Image (cartoon, rainbow over all chains, first blue to last red; front, side, top):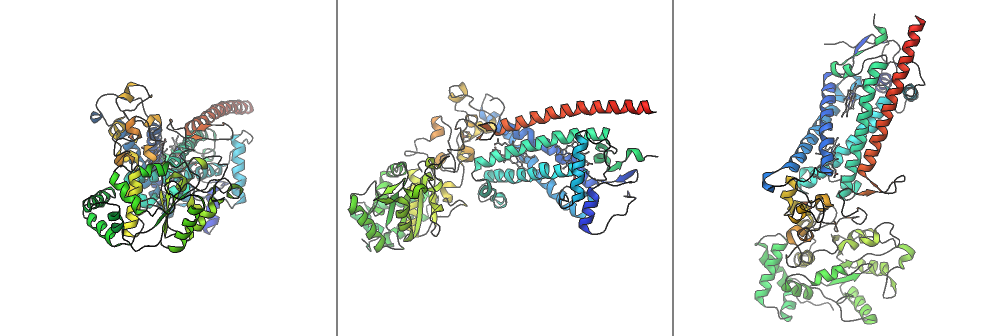
Length: 249
Length: 362
Ligand code: HEM
Ligand code: HEM
Ligand code: SF4
């Protein structure tokens, strides 16, 4: 098994650890095992599901041009919806798996769910990242896990909209399954939050656009940081290992 | 006015035969989705139960619910139901007027306190102390609250009483308010629709009068047997929806072929009602069958979820006065895309500069 090594001793106590793993490390070893296999597997499967959901979801609201022939010969729109529902259900299962893993995985596995909002140090480094991306900071800091700004973005413009999509998507699916179904028992409450079914469609679609914007920025920055920062990124999400470029012997 | 007559006694007095009575019981059992075994139970209840008075109030509304109700397709059904209701008070149907009518109302309230069913068409406007709707010289709100206090249960007829309907659409100048927001201590059965289907209305009344209890309701308080499914779930154009065959314009070939009206803004997928099964006017037709998409008249906020002929709802935003989810979304994507392009260019520039600086210093 890979060993995670850090030169500085990690503090004890859960919350102190959360902060420690979200903030800068002064001089880490040149390579550290960060993202365990379940996190990486989830990341790419989740990305795949989201791509499928965005494409099919867009087409559900704005269908392709009408086709001719006998209705009994075609199931085009039905299949688009089928892919959406299948990918949606897979995404829910994967998300549950990811949440469960946050309890068993290493410290980085719960970063996504637990940004240390209470830590001044962390907010200071969020600000530092903003300055770095605005070309106001010459040298980036080094992080073992996500950089603080990325962590903030992943929580607010990825995780929260995703949970919203799962809730509203589950509610819309429950309508198709019927008001006596288990789906309705699990998701019927969403209609108390957003009101009528039509509004739930609108909220679902708006949340999609939030995730689309996140994905564009996220992909761009992952590639940019891979080139411009002092650490590896894209390969880290593939192999799990974080390399620090200027610590190489 | 309190009498010990059963429903059946009243029917016989109206000249309704035993045979017609039995027919009515089977029709009602079928329309309630209860199956043939329930017809004798309905008959038994009608024969033995004391007639329950129903009081019908009209607030801020257009009377389309009353109009629909008295057109209950089967003449038999309407005869029955009309004799079932003790029409001591119904502004549209009663014979009395003025002070006589108000006196009759007070009398029913006194004699049947805790016994009668209150049917409410329309809703009370709360603005200006309720002055936008005056009945018998005082705000409708007062009359409503007074009559609700002695009711066994309350039926909210139509979208006005259930959801507010057009008078509660933005900006709702009179502050028209659905009745469940002003009556909080009584069971309320919502029968939304603008108007509701006649058979649905009579079916609900019959159910309550015969079984002496309110029908099973969904989480919004609507009877499950009529509001348990969406128009879309039982729409006869649904095979075209699944195939991907849509009308693209009101006068195109596809619309003549009877393709699905989804792209024309049909609200069938988000509307709970029985139109696609019970249909209207003795089962003759319903909007989609007549070539017009569903406008979702039994859903809350359907006036504000417009435009009726577009798939995506308009959203009012501070920047774009009117917009929809895709215009907002694509706008955001364009901004983000431009920002990324600019950031890439700036990053490349900076990198080139620092590389040449590094080369110089070496
Ligand atoms: C990243 C996640 C998701 C995205 C981007 C997404 C996107 C969309 C979009 C854009 C629509 C069309 C909305 C409209 O215009 O009416 C839609 C519809 C729908 N989505 Fe999702 N969705 C996601 C997740 C889910 C999930 C997890 C489920 C649950 C199984 C789900 C179930 C549905 C259902 C049932 C509909 C309605 C289909 C219909 O009306 O025929 N979605 N989705
Ligand atoms: C739909 C598309 C995507 C979504 C929703 C998404 C979402 C996420 C999330 C939530 C994380 C945090 C993982 C965790 O802590 O468990 C993450 C990390 C990461 N993603 Fe994505 N991702 C997507 C696509 C991509 C793509 C296309 C790339 C590569 C170009 C990429 C590269 C990365 C990298 C490198 C990390 C680790 C960042 C770090 O080390 O701080 N992602 N992504
Ligand atoms: S016409 Fe309306 S209700 Fe019928 S299948 Fe099409 S979208 Fe659904």
